[in-house]
Length: 294
Ligand SMILES: NC(=O)c1ccc[n+]([C@@H]2O[C@H](COP(=O)([O-])OP(=O)(O)OC[C@H]3O[C@@H](n4cnc5c(N)ncnc54)[C@H](OP(=O)(O)O)[C@@H]3O)[C@@H](O)[C@H]2O)c1
Image 1 (cartoon, rainbow, N blue to C red):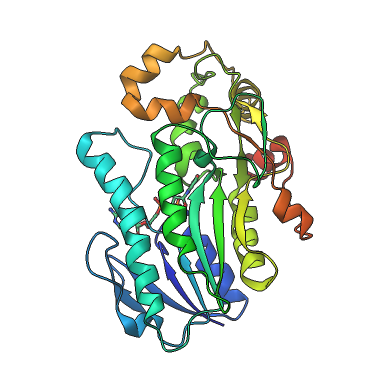
Image 2 (cartoon, rainbow, N blue to C red):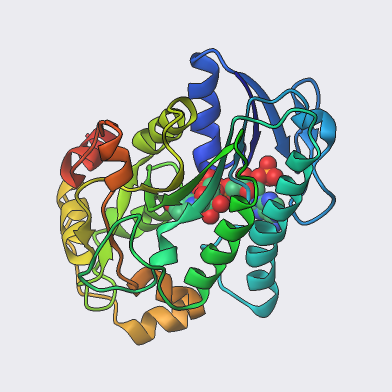
């Protein structure tokens, strides 16, 4: 297939590109620093994507967005929202102008759409939650859904916490844990819906190639864990102690509004993936972490 991809330089995108190329797909990359021979420059905060990057594409995978894991000032939050909501709108408008539309549009979203739900089990059929991130994800998904036509299916990747030692949330936690200073966040009872990077990339490939997969798709392992359990398992894997919990007020001081993401609870289940026969290489946390660190 010819696949047009945004966010190819990101945490998920880098691995995804390698997998898609290995599977024989031809890639066209859109990014702020992309360029010839197989790339086009595009900033989700600016102009619509160039038609040449889309013409003839069988699939479009749209992953770009200003990083969420940073202190939210009015300005950074505006970029977080605009790069996703307006960026997706521009992409969908450009797709609508294609002579022949792609058969599938796969767009990033996040389990943050469910809000803070304590112990409730959340599947793709669960209602969205409350809060700024949940609203952002709903607006983002609404724009993505506009790409749906009888010829184009839309997949909304409700991604959980993607685990790799090379970056993302785990990459940021590692220095403290390696020093034996890792601890639960808040009361540690919040559920973390994690997924090994390798499974996330495999799941996107699965969604690309399975014509019956459409709509929301939880990108999370079948066995989410509480933050306390996560902390214990990570510390044990690294053979380091886990120290005192980091209290909520300290988190707020350190991370501002973003602290809500660290203490919010989402116990997501990948119902759609499992129903369509996707098999996770890493269904439980301990083997996933062992694969990374042992
Ligand atoms: N990783 C996770 O745990 C996780 C969890 C839930 C949801 N997601 C979502 O999944 C998508 C991909 O995740 P990721 O971790 O691979 O993201 P990432 O590493 O932060 O990369 C996303 C890409 O977005 C582009 N980008 C960054 N800032 C931008 C801006 N201001 N305007 C336009 N483009 C910008 C960059 O590409 P260029 O520089 O090439 O343009 C970057 O490579 C994101 O939308 C993210 O929100 C990720």
